[in-house]
Length: 473
Image (cartoon, rainbow, N blue to C red; front, side, top):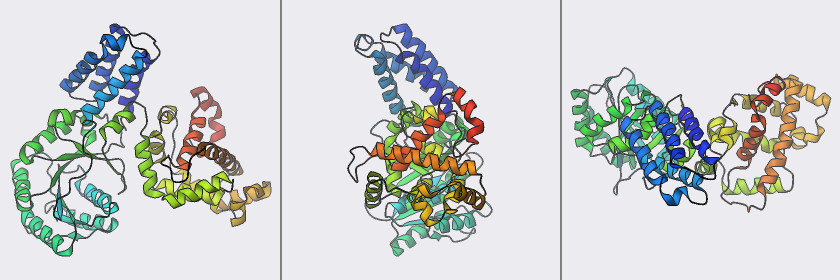
């Protein structure tokens, strides 16, 4: 997410961090690099210019340049201004819900932006909050659009309302909302039609749907990979519909990120969600301050904690902590934690939320497919072997390798890494109390292990043949 922009901004600030005394020329050079990085990321020219001007104004004051730690103060200013450009520290990432149910959320956007998929993601998101969503199929033009929404609804356990493709979308929306109220469903998500480009017919239809149901939220789904064009699309939709926010999709791809940095300033509407993958749980509420921290390489521990808390309850965490403290954490526990962690998303993204780890891993390819090989090895062990790894002698390891379709070297490597992780996990627990809000046991240990694997580029090349990409490539 924003890899190129993040790397260039961090490099620009790195030159400042090594200096005890800053001059206006030092700040000017750093700002030149920052402005260039923003422009290369497809940020609107005026936005990039305004950003640099605001940072310069705050960073060249006498109290900053002659302060005890001027470099850190400049980094702090960049972080604060980046947060402001992304939406501000007080930006409301949460949805607005109607005082009287049902809350109506209308998804709009161009064809191919991912409206139908994100209707399912949004339904899954609100369902996890204890609400009862209802999907409305108002795209009557695209072939199989209604069928696609029905399939999506089935995958996220959400009912779908449809009147076929011969009824006006505004009437479908009106009847769908009425049906939701009758059934006691409290969130209605309307999947509307799109076009390849903005036109009068599209906008008139969307305006009729809006008038028919008076939605609480009108969320524009934007493809982040379209770059600056996303801002132009956002301006057009906002002028016609007065949108309440954006869902920015495909942020897990090789996007330059300019759209995210420009939207709030140019269109003056907040980004409410970001799509970070293809799975239906790959939708995150957008927090400008957390995203700024990610871009500047400072991690996002709060988002990591939230992901962990969604998968591991307090009772499980307390039981796991107890096992760690009395050294009874075994390979069965490890497998259970590994499976829970897989539900949180790609491992590379997860570790990138931990401060400092993302930089260490930028040249290391971590593939989630390798966890399947780890599972195969552990499942090829007997229950006693999983509970007592000390039993794994040479003969047993050869049998496990044959049973899992791996090599003895891979089995040996897993056992060694498990021992290292168990030690690190026990060390990381420190004096923490059960149920405290700290990052999950396994992600922290995997991060530490990944950091050891990352090492220097020279060491990476030296160990490449030995590692063979398992579990980190």
